[in-house]
Amino acid sequence: MIRFLVFTAFLIMTFPAAAQDQTIPLRREQIEFSFAPLVKKISPSVVNIYTKRIVTQSVSPFMGDPFFQQFFGNAFGGIPRQRVENSLGSGVIVDPEGLVVTNAHVIKDAEEITVGLPDGREFEAKKIVVDSPSDLAVLRIDAKGSPFPAISLKPSESMEVGDLVIAVGNPFGVGQTVTSGIISAQARSSLNISDFNFFIQTDAAINPGNSGGPLVAMDGSVIGINSAIYSRDGGSLGIGFAIPSEMVATVVAAAKSGQNSEHGIIRPWLGITVQPITPDIAESLDFKNPSGILVAALHSASPAKNAGLQVGDIVLSINGKEIREPAEMKFRMATIPIGDKATFEILQKGKKKSIYVAAVAPVDIPPRHEKTLTGAHPLNGATISNINPAVAIETGIHEEEGVVIVKVSSQSQARRIVAPGDIILTLNGKAIKNVRMLEKEMQNNRNTSWFFVLSRNGIQRQVILR
Image 1: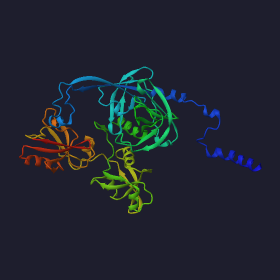
Image 2: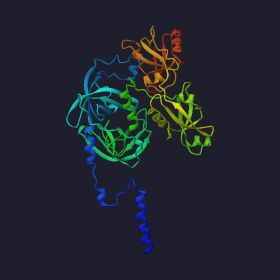
Image 3: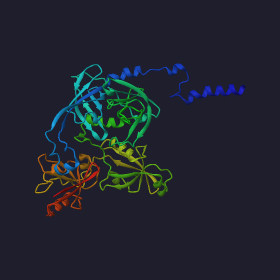
Image 4: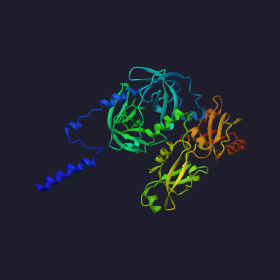
């Protein structure tokens, strides 16, 4: 009996010291809590976003048929009909002067955008930044000098798996709705949702209409923007994904400073091709711990190469954050302002070392040699360019070399077979590496037939014209 009392006393004395910040509920009164004070604090800053877009439809059964489009483009489209399409999303005010963050897909192609506040006021919104790679957008509303209720951002990485969160939005258009849950996982990077596959996972219910709304920590700060769900039928299955606040802060900063283009915000370019360290690769490199990413190739103008990175090196961390997958490296660099430097911890020839990599804008190397084609050939009216890092960002492609269609005249013959972003891989069986090579092959073609192999959105297709 004495031993039991002593042991109990030991637990009473030591347990509070081991759980000063976070404790497991031990009494009934500790379980009886409410989110109401938190909701009252943040709900005035969560808005509804209504958009209108004009959709053009064709009545022809041949419209959209790949076979007919290959030869005739949209010539069989018939008389187009236009209709107004409405959509609904959510957003959050992050600046008292009227900056609203939402998802880029919520306002995509919108002709009109209306932001509705919980107090009943509505404002026409202006697009400031639409950053499709991150699926984030920043709007501006104007209350003629009156400040708006705003929520501050908080680093998502200050949170832990298991921490409580709430999601606020307008699911299915029923009105502002609050759901609660926990952080289920951090750094989800195998989703293929956006160019930056790096998300917070939560089991707080997120449904259509929640897109663009905030994921909020218990102190009332935004740690993410709800963006997507995993679902079989369109409803919530308790697997939702939010864009981390670190990326949100980068986009908001670009909106405030004006450092953005028509293609989104300008992000650092590394010029690195990497691959994850699998157990097999780790074994071949005699690397005990399969972590980090392997450098497979470096662009000649890569700032990482200039800093001392070599092919075969392993990148272990960036600014003290462990790198386990290529998506993590892309995310870390995307949140670093142009002009700053990032500290890379690398493993080079078996030795750890630190290098300092400059955050630079995508380079225009090699020269783009942009040219609008004319003449008696199928590409008459198309503007072509060599692919380089800057062109790749502008056109939304991922290739490192080749020739890309930059734009196509609406009245040209070329619009029947190519579109902006198409990559010309071969012409009459010959690989096309640059603009001059394409021009030469077109000039030398004395036949009446043309055989193109094009790549569009990563899918190859053949076009034969006789």
